[in-house]
View 1 (tube, helix red, strand yellow):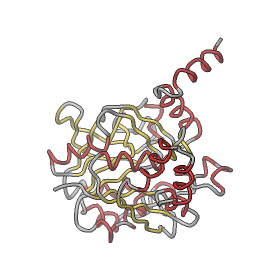
View 2: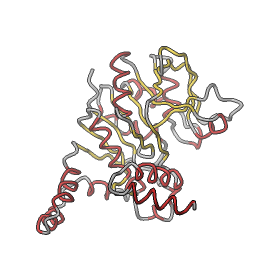
View 3: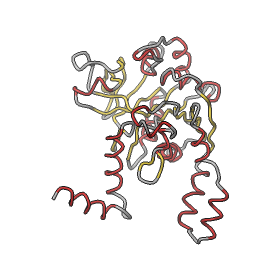
View 4: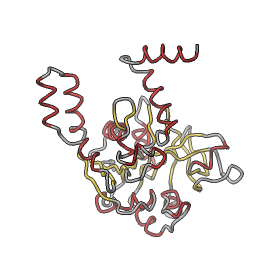
Length: 287
């Protein structure tokens, strides 16, 4: 079955970026010259997604404005002959169909996904977390969709992390099926290094069957007194298979200031318009 819909949970407080996020939605923080959420939407569209359900909260209306048309801005750019900028701005509103759903209380990622149930319906769907930025020849979400098409079951994007960092992630207990693909035997939310079942960490790209909604309804609050998606997936394991993909590509944790800075440097160095000058600047700092 084709994966047509994607859920982007974007209702969090963004406390790690305070005071910037006092008035600015975290997802609108720029990574070079595009807000974080635009990278995520572009990946979804490049992976074949037709409809995006954005989970928002109070104060996040700026995201709706960003993906809408701005006729005054477009007119001004046209009058000034800024054709390249005009095309960039117009392209944003043409990315795809986006609807917005309010999560009235921030009760965890699992609750945010459950909020989208009515709009997803009874079909498999994708989940993309805007804190996680990927760079890959084949979009990471598309890699996960390809695995779903082969196995017909939920798929989680993963990568190996140092054992000392397992407490920062959901971690899977894997059974290797083929190169870079594992069947998930268990999941643990943020285990201590001495308790972790492996070093394979769950990252922010998922393909989920609609059965996850029924599991999330049964999921009690977990770590942080929130409804964790990892806990819902653990219940799903009792009903059907779940697979993990070790994706190919680069990953940046843009949900914290240092990670965002690293992403900006790494992506900036690869851009022909700013890369050479940025490289020389960095060399000067190290001199």
